[in-house]
Amino acid sequence: MKTPFVLLLLSLLLMTIFLSEARVLQPNKTQSSLNIKTSQNTQSPVLDMYGKIVRVGVKYYVVPLLQDQGGGLDLASTGSQSCPQSVVQDDPYWWGNTMQFYPVDPKKGVVREWSDLNIEFPDAYTMGCPENNVWTIVGDLSVYDDSHYITAGGEKGNPGSQTLNNWFKIVKTTNAYKLMSCPDVCYYCSYNCRDVGISVEGGQKRLVLSDTPLEINFRKA
Image (cartoon, rainbow, N blue to C red):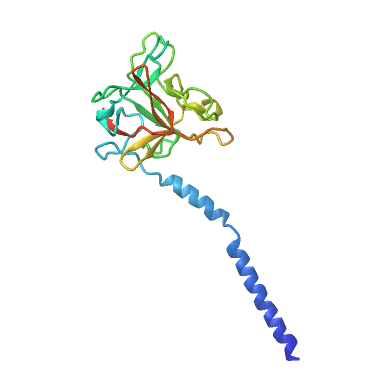
């Protein structure tokens, strides 16, 4: 009579072990969601070259890490453009034009790493030109090539598929920061995440989506 009782105990023990392993293997969706939210909420603030937090709507010069290789950023006419539409890098030791940053989620006025944001030249002189001075990217972001130039003509806000090309991110590098296009404002859109780099054409250094990023710092105007 003892044998069935022992078998019963063994069966219960095996079932307990099986259920315990099943619970361990099952993904914890709630914890995963919390981890994602925690990661988003702990995005580090972008710092300027003096260690101060970069603020929304405040004017900054964007200067390269290696200043002997080029200056700050500005708008200029390139090719057959009659208006200064192309975002370019100035000559070495020139500050370029002032810029402002407008994140999709301002979070108390702080510009944060990996946050989608619009970039604007508030002081660029474009008298008589129809385009505004908000950055945008030329072309279809789902196509991987070297023709995605950065120009004026975007718009601030209104996140979604219609404004996909207007959003940029500031990302920390080993020694400085870089700009990249990797918009999270449209979950169903197709695009390639790429850095913002330099293409030298006709003696001008144009900003373009690239595999080689331009490393930058921020200097408050």
